[in-house]
Image (cartoon, rainbow, N blue to C red; front, side, top):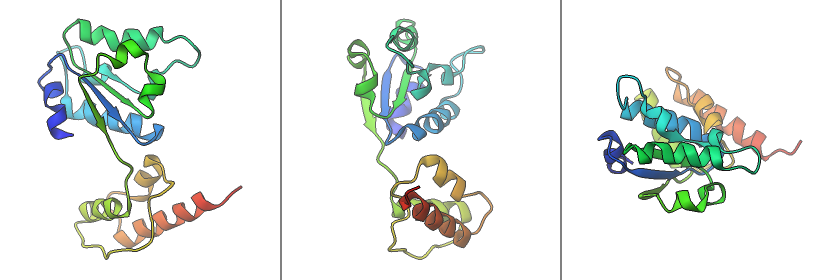
Length: 168
């Protein structure tokens, strides 16, 4: 995403759609982008120009969503939309304004092991088991904790996967 975020960081009038694998990714990705891109001005944060699942209407009216999308663009400011199933949620006139569409894929076991290595600065053995399928980003973040050891992280991921497979 680094290259795609460049016009956003430069505060250019650019509309970026980031399609995430599921709704739980929307807010954390938006927060990270807000942190990376900083402020538009002294009084306006870039995070205010990011549309997420929380901005979707609960009922039939898309006017609030349409307004939130159009407002920054008509002012010549960047807009980032972070949604799962964006074409189901966004009005057609907003879809037509998108300058770039980036798709984030779900994390797989290899990605999780790389995250664990990054967090722990320790090499982690290759694991053949599927640690990722069915887990939300929140669950993954809860299992891979800063200043913890890789074994505990992997055990939590295994436990989460087992509980995700159980029916209630």
